[in-house]
Image (cartoon, rainbow, N blue to C red; front, side, top):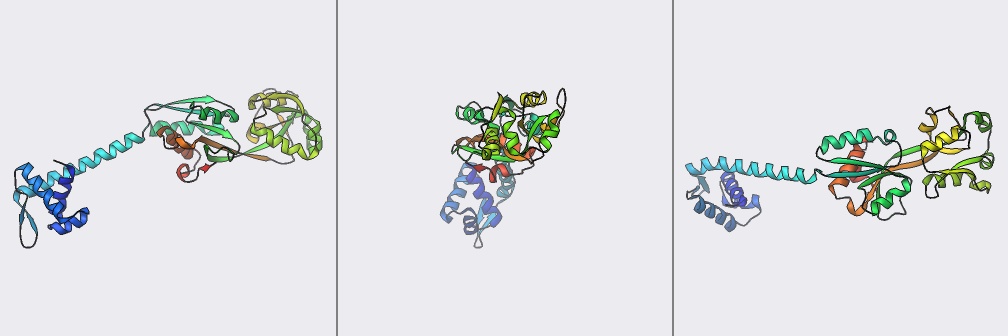
Length: 304
């Protein structure tokens, strides 16, 4: 017995007519008739009485119609459950973060993953933005958070989450000096600089490029918290996210240059060819929920 036999049986029972049942099922009338005959032979009972008006259910047919409807309903439930299982993740989801988890809304994202994929185990590594794409291409991670623009990365799809405000910061006792400082003044001061691949490098270079001066580099650091501590200790200027610049620093606070804020995008990125994988889809969906971007993971991801 096949499910299509039961579908045909129920359709004929509900329409009372072979032609109308054939239209509903998008089959030919001979095919519908053959299904009914095959089912009757397999069950060993007559299901219909043929009349001039169409097809009337026999007593056996009326009883079996209820069972057939229930069987079809259960078959649909099975398909629905199987579909849900295919999209659920029961293994590892490997992510990388490039900055502090609170800023990335990781607690909300992890709560969403736990709710939607209770069988999954999430692993989170800390990586610099410039290492995220490399790890993706090596198959080490499913998705990763990263600053910057990915237009030059044709293999990568970026889900834009927001834009971080970035400020020029200096030691607290430089506050008066920074209050009246020009860009030329900034260029002449010592800087806590960045790794050459860090997206903050371009921002800092663009800021002082018009003065034609190379950065007066006091140190090269690739960690925001270390940069913040070194700036607070008096080593030099640097760039920091505004929320980090305004938060308390061990040993003192920072001075913020009042000349204006810069901006840098924050994204969740993944390899385009892997977007259909359950782990990647789960990560994108959870990030969208955590950042209040309902359904943008499927509609608004910017493909580089």
